[in-house]
Length: 326
Image 1 (cartoon, helix red, strand yellow):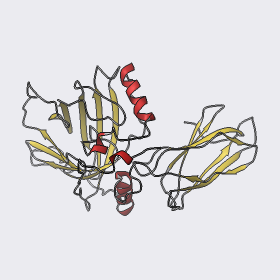
Image 2: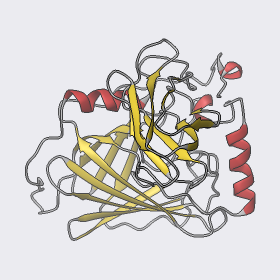
Image 3: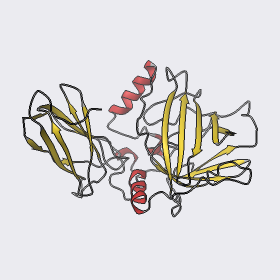
Image 4: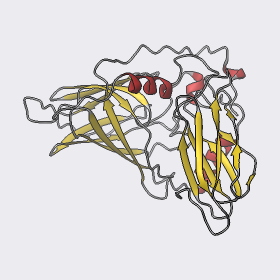
């Protein structure tokens, strides 16, 4: 990622504007990116509560401005080629289109989590512990996206499937559009609840399945495990870190847009750094899909005054054929 600044090409210039949604309201917290087409340098800004953003100290040249999709509320935005002259202040207002939620209130975990974060910061204090001496992971947690996402390395068949899904105008092939479980594992933005006992850890979340159980009693995976949507999970403690091993998946769920086979194997580690933060590391392996393991890192924040909500989705989805994505 580049740092905005002048160059020998010109005196510094700037790009400013406001990010709004289809309803005309300001969109705060949008990640706006500017790319210098000559140097490939990438500059990043975040829209303010008013929707305003700014890139200052840019060199003259050609740029593109993009905003990645925001959950399922807003679709991705990409500008045409913009030519910035020396000392020019170029104004570009960005109007985002609805994503697959079509603006349905409360239908986007990103929006829900952002609202909770604004309402109450993470509590501070030492890591709570169980009578057995292990960190107690129990609580309601707000998930986050990986701050430095790693792109998986796909085998040719998997890359072709991913590109086909990415190019689709219709989203009816997505399991979530058919009221089926949307993704594995638990990663990214969302509201997650953990209830921990010495022999069993339960994770609850707002999705079709709605729960996941991790056995902590020392049992192995069954010899005839799966296939299922959530797989079979066992865990053990490595010092203050809970390691979870999951196998037995079917091949019907999506990893974002990426496919996988029934050889999918997921290894997770959970470490409660203090009262208000939970560090989650995930390694995804599937030798028939990925050239090498794919790693994801998240940090969850405790939300003691919130809880997971009831999730209802019916397979007789009348809007299925009308769902579109841009």
